[in-house]
Length: 167
Image (cartoon, rainbow, N blue to C red; front, side):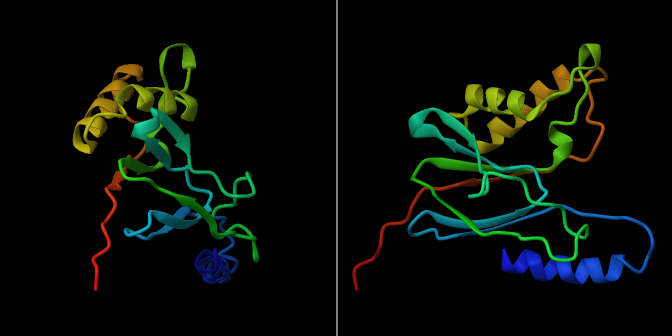
């Protein structure tokens, strides 16, 4: 949270003099590969998904307060908070840009975050490369024009856990 506050302060200071409203989203996460503990802060970015394969669950990684935080550059001193979660071996985290779910289907229906979670539940046991390929294919099939209208970036993190070495 502190890192995003500093980043926002610098960005806001630059942008307030341009007269043109601009913003950017960011998600910052630090993971401890030994314990599975993660600390993170979100500045208006889509919530990553935690795929808990052993429990057949897919859940958005929400902030502790349960509310979204503003994008960077909008406000002078937004209260970005640091939240925590714990991964267990076998969990997979998926980070993505909003272009992934801002796709228009038939009858002007949008591919929503809720639909993304449902599609991920059907793919959660696939290895990351296959999972991403199948998800992209599914969203393209949903899209009226078979394409994405915005940039798409997917990043995955498989947590396998580490055994502590004895000294």
